[in-house]
Figure 1 (cartoon, rainbow, N blue to C red):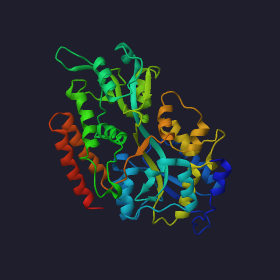
Figure 2: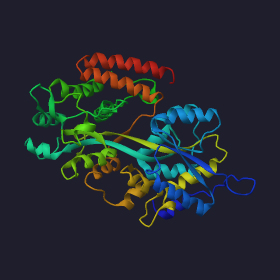
Figure 3: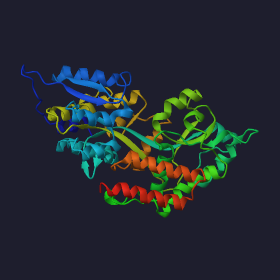
Figure 4: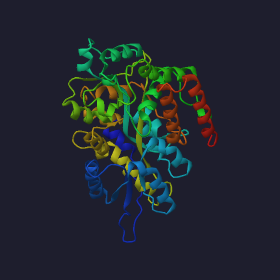
Length: 417
């Protein structure tokens, strides 16, 4: 969308005023630290100078964000503007915390952010502007692949298994020294759950049925996706104890499924990205992958709601662009190596480096599926991680484990849908 068009959609919204005639300060809660948010803080100063509207930045710990803002709202200390992980949105919307954006802003979001607008949509209602977006792809250390006799990343899961097996080496005790493939361990279980989402979507199946009343976790497609992950351990190609977060940057893993935000850690560990190639998670011509995102929304009880939405719009639109044409949020996200799905920002930034471009291409080509904004998402994904891990470890049959998981997840869904 052009600068002219973006400016044309801007509503001249009234701002709440104090008794002395000055605009009431807005508060914005985000999880970024002061160094990460530095470009945004500069923008907020510019916004105040330009409009007279102050926006106070509040850093909230990522791990405590949802609980902090919900507790604060009970106490009447909620911020005007939230910046939240999309899967927190369902609980916040269910509690009546989030306001709907003005119609003109909603039109801008749908036009500018494409399918990533789904990340800010709960039960069909749009609640904010998508900001940071992460996409999962296969990341390969080509130096290890070439040493094993391969000059390109795998295009199918069978090829991934073949290449990974050729790379894997073990010590005298039989433990993996160099892993052909490594899972990314995390407290949320995302290292297995997010690749599972991608493999399931590539088979044309959603995790949930429409309306979230039922799950599809006992479907043949879900069972096959869990088995795909399990065979990597079953066949001795890798071990769950090998953590891709540590092994890949150290040159100890040939491939991993990872999001774009890990770029700097890989570059720091390997010394450069020259031998790193990003490609689709191998699932054939119809491959899909997972995206998750954060979005900016406004508290439904904010006395300064109109002013808050105007600040959100400005920060994410061409009205805040610098000489390069990149918005304030686009500049901040770029400075920390994160991605935005804002089409105008991506166009203004031009072609990305070889590592980043495949992630952007997946977004632009409609290959991404948004992480579902379902009630109790974190609890459900923890259950998914436990079930898939049990299959990977060989402690449970895939069909039985996924059937048990499906029933347990539907019990949770029954409470809300």
